[in-house]
Length: 488
Image 1: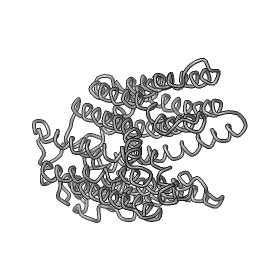
Image 2 (image 1 turned 90 degrees about the horizontal axis):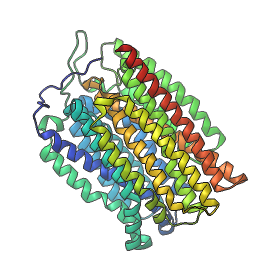
Image 3 (image 1 turned 90 degrees about the vertical axis):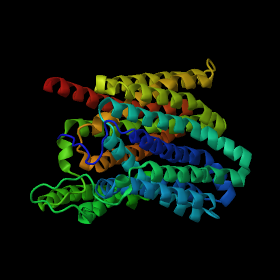
Image 4 (image 1 turned 120 degrees about the vertical axis):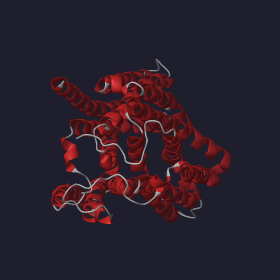
């Protein structure tokens, strides 16, 4: 598959692309800080609105579910109707939902707002990936994704610290509200900048880029493939639900095979829809593009392991050692900043080194995992301070920055622009599914181990499972390298 140039866009010399990137990074900063702040704010939310454990679980799960369910459909809508318009709509919904969450009088109101926040985030995220595809080429695209990764790392680093600060100055009732209300001025600023800086065709709700092939229907709302959107949305919902809902009854797990069955039905529908001459929700031919299929699999496996690291570290610091949430947040600042720097560094070199960066990043993260386990056991023996984790986890941060942003660049490199949004959303859906499955399985294994032994052993077991998933991702990256060498 070859990538087509966008119509009506002079991407080679138009400086507007850097303004567009600035808006995208502002919104990414807002959305990610919001996620990391919520984790710190949960105890305050429980005290302020008398939330139950189920309510707190849904503060996290409701956002994750709606976000994952609409990702691919939103990506395809942006491909067809204009990415800028969908992006601004998503930011507006996310900002309004943040205001509603900050003013929530009770837990039910808060959870409803979090569901709507997930919708807004699901609308805007694939447009960001699609617009980077649309406006940047070659080494500049790697640099753009590197800046994207830098923003991600910085957001994750500052989120817990900022959340702890706002809760401290605002008190039990006001502090957690400020963590949501912080999004409102940022969101309004992003919408204003988008309306001023985005080219007008980009913010209109119309199909701009697709070119008809002989025998195809004229692009329009039918190209949104409503049946395919519903099938895939339900499939993702049924697959995610048993994993994000921690207190699942046995019958809930019946949704998992039903979700897998719906994935099969969706695949058959997409093939049929394309045979009718219409544009399917996802062109399944993209999976025959080696860079896309290998890269998407690497991301799914990587997120299935890596995201659980920070959950286990927080549990160990707070539950195992009895430290505060702020101290727990401070420990992850160095790895987050290291990830931010590594993402920018790797983004500038991804077109030169390719998947070799991914292999090196995973190896660096595996070393950080092993050394972190060593620090935890040495601290248990009173031989070292727990703050040594800042150094060993920083190696994991370097690996994370060297893997995620470069892999996004390489995975989407050969995807046609007409499917940039939906293809990026497929990759993000793999990340969301991997994250939910990994956190559920790995933390469950850690808790079971803790019930028989101690927190150091429980963390070691969890880190061992994480290492296994990362080794699988490493294997796929090495296979991809060999395939490229053979092709060359």
